Length: 195
Ligand SMILES: O=C(O)c1ccccc1NCC(=O)[C@H](O)[C@H](O)COP(=O)(O)O
Image (cartoon, rainbow, N blue to C red):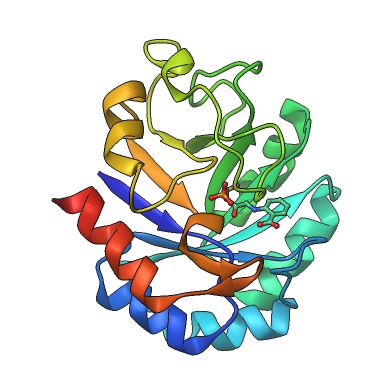
């Protein structure tokens, strides 16, 4: 099971997530209590080994803004929230990095439908910690897709049982307050997923 820990802004938490076995870590570069600048994301990403995917998270920015931030930060993936047309993914293809399409469960849930590499099926309000009916996407989402939205150490096994995703993604559920990550919860989340 692929595990992404999102919304990191402190080197200590990046090290914890990597040490605990995360497959990907996310840096939010859009309006959010977790926002980091591309320069800060570059500093944090510099400490991350190659086998862990570094992801820049955006919502609604145009492809040129995403491109500039991706290049400045050096992330190896971008995750686009909001109703981006297929053309926005096509416009970013030449970056040669992983493209993640982030949607709620009303969207086209076939990974690759917009030429993206990974799909993230999230709550309607991304990064809110809102839980939703995870089981509603079972059998509808296909390919390499991650589940997010209200996941936490205490419920992630239940979510995996309900939705049968390829991967999981968490932010609020490993925080002590919005934007404040907790190393103990990050480790607990990874232990819960890995068993
Ligand atoms: O984290 C944010 O504030 C944010 C703002 C705008 C777009 C995306 C954002 N976060 C994305 C994520 O952190 C995850 O991909 C996912 O939504 C986490 O959800 P949750 O665990 O419920 O916080």
